[in-house]
Length: 248
Image (cartoon, rainbow, N blue to C red):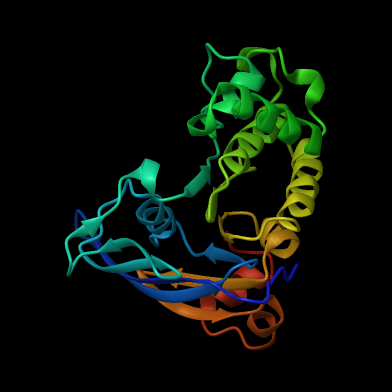
């Protein structure tokens, strides 16, 4: 799934977070067109890191950059609000607006370009994801798989530079999960930005990720491609994970 372009922009992250008695200290970078899976035991800090990228978890110390664009820099007092960061998030719970139709939900992201253009842009995304027939429906009329497809369309329609998938398939039935996962993998193939996947399902990692970042107790315990991680697992947790006895 290598989608590198000629001029590569990197996502650069070096942050410390403190939530209650928990301390997270993580450094990594990611080339555009790549998907990095963040895995680790429950409570390791995965979702907190995703929240810091999106701007709804405060960074105590550090920087988050996309190329030369500064999202967060505590030393300079910079912390862009969520709507200025160009970071799109797809959550486990799709969080669609219940009072809007599917088309209106997807058009909400690019609304700054004007209603007519946003609607046309949203229509194109519904077509790309094969859900044009759902355009007039409300979220309450959708199945779980349909709702996640709409959530992905809404996020991508806003043209984010960073896409965060935070447990995106966890609420789906097992028989639906594989199909939606395959569709997401297909569309990530055409996404030129940086993708961060947080998941408890190692099948998600295998299907979607180019690289893996393992966090344990708030620290990076291993980073590499899936093949590298499988060849030389660095900790007992990673060995359990690879043998199918651990949760990502």
